Length: 215
Image 1 (cartoon, one colour):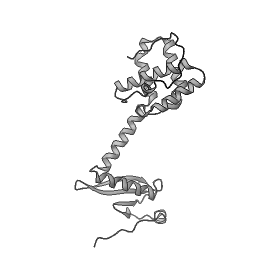
Image 2 (cartoon, rainbow, N blue to C red):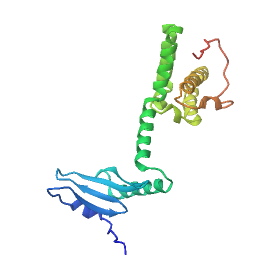
Image 3 (cartoon, one colour):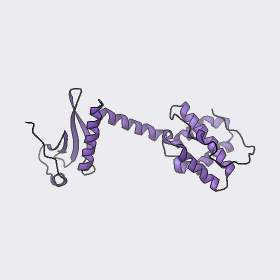
Image 4 (spheres, helix red, strand yellow):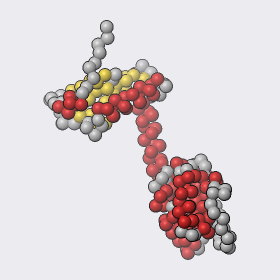
């Protein structure tokens, strides 16, 4: 009859003492709390993938609670049932997070402006940048460009409309569309949410302002 492991309690985790060598407090199904002589308590998960034993770091206790560590264990077990290695999946997720942080709307917009800088006058470049800094960057500048949805962008444009600046709202939509198109061309996003706004903005009296062209 297989030996069953008694699950840990919160109190056991809190009161666990250290020794001269590392010690494990087992919670079951591969999850354990590693007690190191230096005083650290670290959650680890042992599992088998393609016949090989692997060890995944979950995080330190109490920053990662017992309940949170168990949640991570269940996520890993679910991945294993799908034939996915939890460690590889975790690394992929971290890489995606880094890529998203590098490809925010502000970063992509500034790169687009830099590419077009030689084609624009200094005053025009400044006008485009100031418009984005005032109307778009505060809400969407730190968002991954690939995650921005039409309602998010529309909310920014309607805020401009509420100030009575219908022409600026239309112009900002055009600029944002070109930023997204640049993002598509450079592989930073896959769609332009501003393309879904037909009829969503108030009509304005067109004035002759410079047409912005994509590079």
